[in-house]
Structures are given as C-alpha cells and as structure tokens.
Length: 356
Image 1 (cartoon, rainbow, N blue to C red):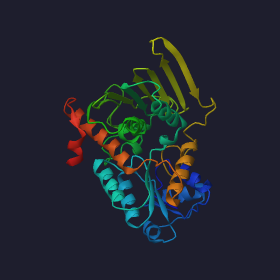
Image 2: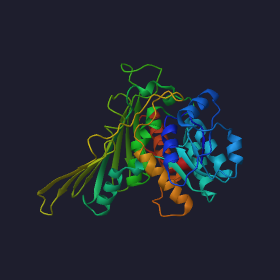
Image 3: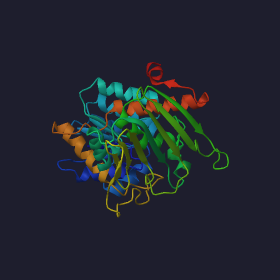
Image 4: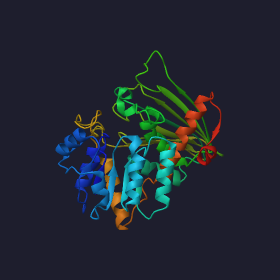
C-alpha cells in the first residue's frame, strides 16, 4: 500500500493502522506539498515518493488517498485507472461532480474501492442495525440526527477550501449524515436551511448552522448541524429513530445505544442501554506538523476499516465497507440541501441532481 496525498489530518492515523495490519507492507507516500510530505514522513517513518512513481509501481496493490477534498476524486480515479485498489478519505471529493466521477470509475472497474466513512465500523452502528433488523422498535416514521464541528475547526483552511461545495456541513457534517443515509438509504428529496449567523462568525468561515429534512416515501429524517460546539470531537453526534414500538438513540464517541421498548399493551417495557468504557481514547490526538488540524488519537475505526479493506482485496469474508455509491448519496443530500437553502427551503428531488 502507498499513500497519495497526506495533508488530511487522518493521514497519519490511517498510516499507522495500515502499518499494524497483518500482511500489509507500506510503500511510501507522495504529495505536491514537499514541506508537508517531509514532515509526514518524519512523523510516521514513511518514504517520500512521487505520485507518478507510485501509480506506475506494479508492487503497489492499493492506494490510500488523504489529500485536500478537491484532489481526492482525481487522485482516486487515477489510482483506479492504474489498476490499484483504493481507499479514499471521506467525503471523497469537493462536490457532487467529484463523487459522480469516483462512483463511475468504480463501476467501470473490478477494483475494491472504499470511501473512508469510518464511523461505519462503530460497534454502536452494528448494534443499531441488529436491533432494527430484529424489529425492536417497530415501524420507524421519524429519524433525527445531529452533528457538529469542535474547537473552532470551522475557521481552519481545511474547512474553507474554495473548491468545496460547503464548509463544515460537507467536510464534518458528512460523518453523521452518512450514518442516516446508511441506516435509511437515499431519500427522494431534501428541504433545508443553511445559515450564516452574523453575531457568531465573520467571512473567515462558511456556514454556521444547517437544518436538513430528508424526505422518504414512508418516513422523514432530520439532520441538524452547527460549527459552534466545544465538545470533544463527535461526542454530541447522535442519531435517534422513533418507531411504533419504541425508540433508539445511537452515539459514536463514546459508542452508545439507548433502546426504549414498548410492550404490545402499550405499557413501557423500559430502557436498555449499552456504552463503551468511560475511558474511551479521545478522537483528537497530537498536534500535526503536516496538517493544521490535530492527528487522530483514537484509531479503533481505522483499524477495523483497514482490516475490511484488506479482506476485500484478498477475497476473504468482509462486510462491504462504504462504497463510492453510498458516498455519492451523501453528496447528493448535501448538494440538494445547498440548492434548497438558496431557494428558501424548496423541495429538491435528488433524481434531478443525479441526472443533471
């Protein structure tokens, strides 16, 4: 495996996860920013190479892309066309066109391609899917998700790339929004309000808050997002599902599931709760010399993600990870939300965006 692009703050965490994975050899890293590349290589002990060298190397079976968003899809497509398996950091590109190109390249190849929505590998997601599959809360009619930025990261250049279709909503909000899409699938349409709040921020950053309504034939899901939280990263990120037989709330860090079940006679059966240990390693780690945001401290999801990626490449049993088609669905939701917000919250069908 080799790395293309290293300026994303997740790069060192995934490098260390790949380094620890059984049977994986790492074959260097490349980035157009020579200063950042040298700092990254010094940090993790990697060998500096060029992009062309890595893509042409027959001994490199897989590439991991950790560039800024606007370079992700181009590097990913180049890797697929060079015959490499690919794991590209989320969101996988700067905008809808990027995700469409990545999904099309994957569909035209026989390569294993994953987008790094690593919360897919949370035990809370696994437990939630098991409860929903067992009908624990009956028929779901309403879903509510919440996501947020932390520690003023909305002011960073990482969240204010000119090519990105939005700021925190796209680059950070996509983490939790992906969980809603993974649980429910692609919605038919979206209504949204995406706002800049003058008392809270300046032109140095993009949107401050957003409220999305995802419209399905048999349910509604809402997703709200703010860049103004000071929790540990993703501590407040949650998804709650409301059904005819109870409700279920899922949180990511620390992993937790709260399940309320109602008996057939409509009396309360009570709450069942599961959570990870209270001493969960924080998401944010050491300061970085190659990215303006901190490195990743908690590599649990990365370790599971790399394990699944390697299993898929080898043809061993695996759960499918997060393919570009799912990442495209997330991009469609965000693009629809931005269009809706521009037109005072109109209903935007996703098929219109997909076909445009």
